[in-house]
Length: 301
Image (cartoon, rainbow, N blue to C red; front, side, top):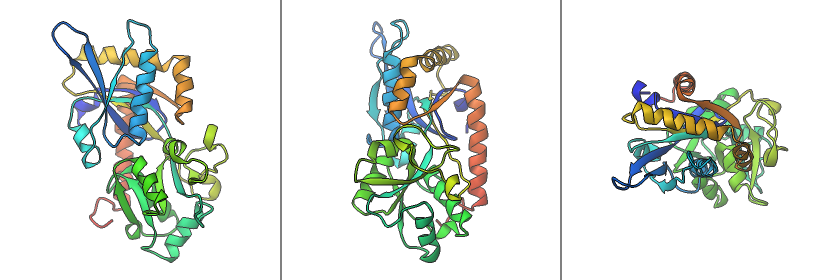
């Protein structure tokens, strides 16, 4: 990660180990009007990047008048987020956990079931994942496969543009397993549609996922938190960056924001500014190390 870019990571609002960012931009509509704040969703508007922007919008609108903002949410999908990353600015908000889901009518009842099926029928079974090689969704499944003694390179992934597409694909039986995060499951695991096989948290999660067993409970020692939040363009002035850090600090401390975060299936993770930058650099380094150990950086998955 570019040091200059990393310096403008603004706020971590949700629980996650690997960053998943929406982009925040502030532009002047003309020389005499207030700036317009925009939150860019780097995928389709049916996934948790959109949820991240909605959470920010809700929290920023509730701040006192001198800090309140009303971000406009814009979709800037393409190349699995690359288009948005090469655009202007972005922000961070909160944290979900990784999870594995199947159709409600699937014969896979536990986390071990799809893993066992892959072990005995290698190359069969399509896994829906947001992103491409070395994405978080792919890496989670690769680590589960390795735990079961399976070469991750035999897994068959369908790269999709956001978590929403993965669940839609599974509903149509285009994929049989979805690797995503718990907040996505909260959005799409409606009655009779989806069954979450496991959440990758240290303990069972509260709320709609309370009855879902953790991967550890099922014999797979994997915890996978996912940070959601925002960053700003590297060309943003220091004073403007500090202004936004202060705004997010205020928002993160509000009781109304905490309540809204729960309804979105997200959990507390309140780092901002330099502390968040340090955390992200360390986490991304660990992510790259794991991908290298699994040889996912080599062409072949």
